[in-house]
Length: 269
Image (cartoon, rainbow, N blue to C red; front, side):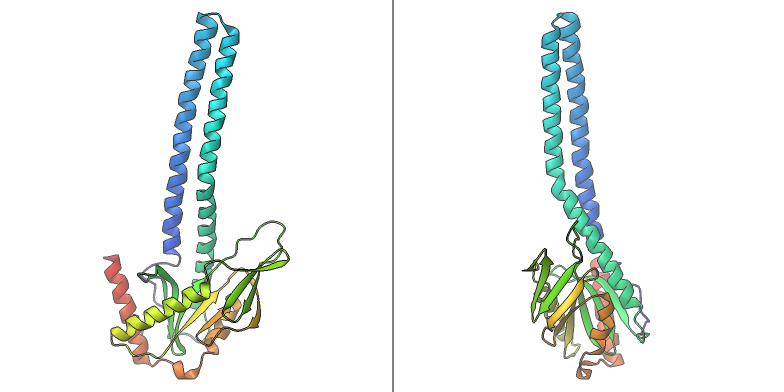
């Protein structure tokens, strides 16, 4: 069994691809605005020259210049408005990429896991991707990484866990987090379990763990045994507390590794 092999895809590859596409869109829109400004400026100067120096109408020339200036400012504002959501999405993707890389690094440096294997950014149609998969003697685990964007004046990023519900502290209120990450993680775990069973790999359980790398957690009531929510420091503890009846044999670990490796190679081909 390989010792923590390199993943077929680096951590956060899907987010990295998304960042690249958003950057291309932002640059493309910026180029359009630049071309418009250059063209409009040339026309404005030509109009000023024509009305002022050819016709001798200074007042009309000033009016033409101000009209073109208004058009330029309006087009520039339209460009900024259009690009603003893309820039926000890129910032969110960059934050998510940072989180996934941190979780991947943590998984690859767990103590007592010399026989473990880590796969990052595993494609899992029709549900998108699984951020991380850990194969070790203590069980099979999937990880969903969630980063919280910090805004000025909000203080610490606080996450509250009450059973299968996750809340985020926004000023003085606890609001449900968007997207239901626990459901997402458990769905991916159930889907992967089904696929492994169909492939003839008999395992009893896949534990789903949602990780918040940049938040402080308040766990008032833990989720069910099949799932967990933790920060980076809590990953090892969640793995260690998994019921021993879900431990994997060396043969099971090797079979799961080969299955994931073969699937990743097929998708990369």
